[in-house]
Length: 437
Image (cartoon, rainbow, N blue to C red; front, side):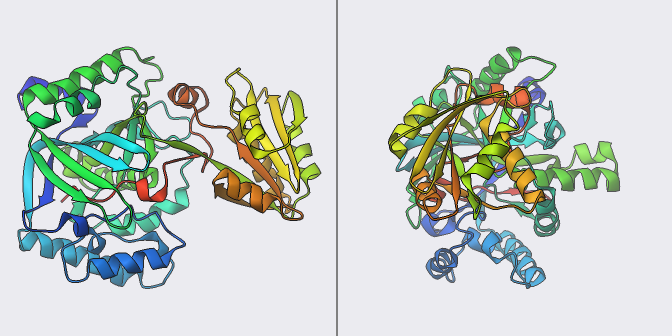
């Protein structure tokens, strides 16, 4: 890559990477496993993965599924991960694609989506709620989740990303332009993914012309940002993994000095960048259930955070969804308790998002010892649980792709568990790697 092009990329907090992929002859369908933070309550899933990958090279030997984090043998597992990384490097199982991006084409039940594996500059990332950095979190970061992840990463030789980062490219002029010319790009992998993960292909992007498409497209987006609050890259999935990388990079600056650290590979983190306007990138609101909590208690608490409230009793979940998924500048959500379903339309002087109001209610009621809460994927599941005696459910409105970036800029990071990108099987699978020491 020529110097001017790299300088342009780096000014946008992006770079190519020396990307590692298994050599020909290794089964990519067994190599790639789903993100470690999925199926955390379904050990049977991970047992199946272990059976499929027994005695073959696989990323299962290089990651720590989070369902095992509380098992008490953490040091042993981390040592085994580090040994596997060292062994794979010593056995020379990788091909290194220097100074490259990888264009990812993933077929799932939601359709065909595209992404770009690239390196993001941790100097430009902050997970603070009110951050104005170029790269930032979209949901609240739970600081207690960082230390155990640092233990896993701190001595690792490799990083394998499950991080998905969003850009807001309504013109579809970056990733989609590369996808349109994929037939002219070398295909570096093509495989079915295990256990319902769909199909995935990877294409090498390493010419100055194609890298220039990325640089020019991002420059166009950057030039139109408010430079006092310039959000170019918003976290989609894996924020705690990126926060872990950031925390370790800050530790490195303390130990070897900021200038040396800037030259270290740990300054960069490998991620998959996706366009929020990709039709196959599906956003799902995460709903809430208050257990053993009367509807009146929840309703009274909600009203205390609102300037105005309108409610409407509705006959079904489908009608409730219709009422709350409207774009009129107001805040909408639904309450379900027993057989009652109510659509709420509110305004608030303090909050502009329904998730923020409901989280304030949750925090207050938990502090008062008056509730237990769970975060539920799926409106039908939420309705079923909320229909049980004594429970109250909140159906959140859909996440708008059109206002997503503006909402982050205006309000800061969403409350935790506001949204999910796709189902568990549609999350990123570990495929590409990169040396970080």
